[in-house]
Length: 592
Image (cartoon, rainbow, N blue to C red; front, side, top):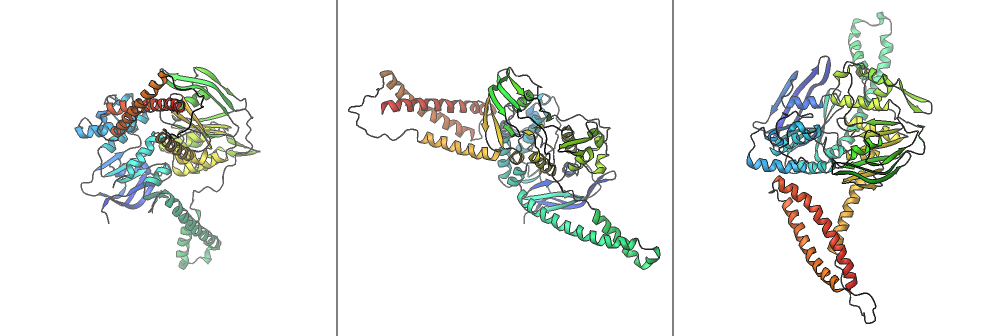
């Protein structure tokens, strides 16, 4: 049995009267990859901060294996704005061989300028530098708080593979369920101030958690039955309760607590039926947009259908957020226009979130917008009911905003968007910082939502459950319309790549001998013959050059400048190879 990297016993943490976790114990063995799951505000980030010495605790013990090297990625890292990217990675004390490793990892995370001051980077870019900072030192024990936030899909898949390889020991908080399923082999769940252990991946956790909830429901049903009988007894005359029955009173109060314990599982699904939206939604009429020399859209046309649920995916910087800001009228196109239907009422959930008055109560923030949500068909949902639906208990609703965690504030912002009764929801990275249970509720809400939905997200699981159609932003104005969800797109893309590779492998067909004695077809001109011979040489040279570059990119020995230059050159060479191969085939048809 591998020795534990960390052993936690009897850990308790509270803020005033609010207990986050009480007397929890767990250990993480060398080589285990552990996912930590809990609702927003129940102490996930606090626990990671406690384990890394950033925050104190009330009681208990935390014992690390002697000499173990720990790397910690906080949810919101802080850097000196004057430090360069490279200095921030090494605290001005980098070793030469580690600097090369840093350049390679930062290139994977799309941070090309290593001398750029940290103060000039966006919050997402700073999070990626912090992630690189953790990975380059190759610690024995990685503690990661939301490592997939601000990563595009290619980066997430790269990180998934990176963490899955070798014998890494990991404790991480993430809402990315595909990531949890592929990387983790043990799940810890904080629920009702207690910690539960599931020895498997996310799929196994879902199965076993349901078993636990079913057992708990049966216990509560049993407690309710006992509670009713004991209540009748307690209401009997005081004379009937002798001193000898004292233990029954104490047992009654225990039963009462068990009977009233809330299981925050949703008992109903919002059926937002009969939301009115006309047949005309919006038409994107040959829209073009560029920032300096960076093309976002180029004569792009799309007619959005009624009740459509569309996902927008693509790497960071390809124009996804710009597209929806143009749709909302927040950014003007260079040419073309968006023609939007008169009945459309947008609800926009942005990456930037909403700035709240921290001294307001949660319920008042929502009531300032409206007292109820119109579900259509004469049905309404009050502000309090909507908040409770998204796991804000009545007690939490009367808390002040400043007491909420970052994830709870994101969830409150979501409620303010829904409170406006939109019939067209546009959600830009809605999954960042939301707990998995809230995501499940939001997914069901969107599945039942009778209006239109556009989601921009890097969360593959969320996209697969919600959308049935994709716009894939490849960059430089290249936008692909794909009729399916993200997993279907990935599978299609892999098959397409294999087909192209197969075509290239077989692009020189077997020549059949034919009798052209009376053939009147056109023959090659002298110039075409020379072109044909030259193309054969060019294609051979290009194939060798591409192969050399691909080997160099995988070697791990390139500088960051060489990596950047070769990464730009490779697609250009592939395009040139395709063009010359097509011309060679045309001439080959004439020749044979």
